[in-house]
Length: 320
Length: 295
Image 1: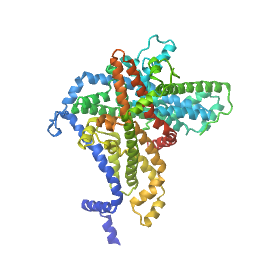
Image 2: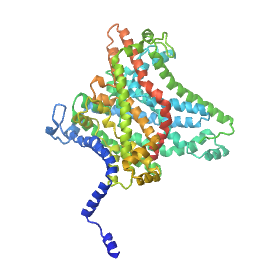
Image 3: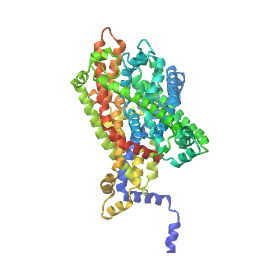
Image 4: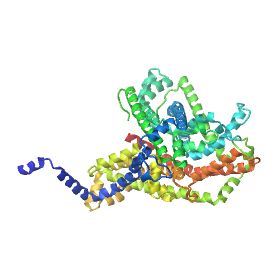
């Protein structure tokens, strides 16, 4: 007995642990055989492309062979810095993202509060059903719809003519100065309703006695919203804010591809569509990869700093 | 939880009136444009050329739909869309469930390594070009399987299913194991039937993604026989955009025919989503909650 326990208390050597691992592994062959297809999948479809990012430091285009493409260190990044079209796409991306942040971030919060305040059950359900629907339309479908709405004989012009706001029908999709607004507002039209779901889920957990107590103290509905509903949503709002800020440099490729045309290109080209154009249309694989890599690194920095800031605002509670 | 508003004072009533009015405006902003697209797809090309209507065209007609169905390639695209959605969803859900079941057992050797490996894939990716080069070297360009194989696994879905499997009472599994069932047997005949709600939620989201996906085609497929509806629609849109921009003198008739075809294709592409929307709605709230609990 004492001998055995003495043996057990000795730390197993590296070799023994290694051997034990394989014995356990072999005994668990059945369960391991369920996991390994997933591991192999992730290796091929996620980790090989991550390794593939190294072409950002090579000179590799559609006409080269990968194994003979020369290493060029940071040459691609130096070219990016001087690339006027790249910076144009950054400006457009940031412009659209900030509009989406300024308006698109607030709308779901207000909409969720409005839906929460409705006491007619049937109406509430109906509003929810209808407002979630656009989320399930693809951007191609919505793009096609937008093109029809904004056509000179379309809904939008008819409406403005009828209201006397304009005298001549005009297709605003051909007007570069309107593009940022079209991109932002169409995104809000599609996603605002869907964006209320998590807020509504949080609000459903608020204890109703708070509201009753507030009412006895004479607080009207607006005051109740301000002092009870909104403070309870704070954590969810911060979480969404962090995710939105880290996505500032992200742009909607589907939306851009379907709404961009030769007239509005200068205002519509965003980073993602620029990567697509340089890589897939012009075949400059290294350059496009370098743009994508640079943007992802900046996005990670944004995510970390946004988290740090909101952490401070939320009494040192990290929401991530 | 419903909040009772017991005594409605004047103040509260004003609030309700304003609130419901605003929400009604939101409803109008969503429904009127959608209605306009649907009714436009049923109007004659003459009515489309004239324009000037919001709710009802001067002449109704099925000619747009007839034009769409005359074109065999739309039927072909519809078939591709259905095939990739059905096959894609089934393989995705089963593959994710299999991996999730394996990872839900805490005594699995190397579990920490596998989970870390998976979580990393949720935050980092190679991006467009390295992924394209991989797909190309695997020979998946212009193959139907490019819709299925790269979409097999999503680690988000694995985590959701893993959490669900962990809540299945272990007594069921133990008694099956005593009767000599192996892990595969337990997974297929106990866990899969018990996790239908979670798997249905994932299937719904994945199905909508598959149906709506167009980037995969745009990036990896040039063979028109493999175009799903979304890509077909994109082609029609781009075609009519360039046409209307060049606007060669007196091509108004051609323009409105393509416009009609475009509208009818939009409706056909969206119809399956609207048809399963009631079913979707049943699952997506629970699905969002599953995702939120994880955070």
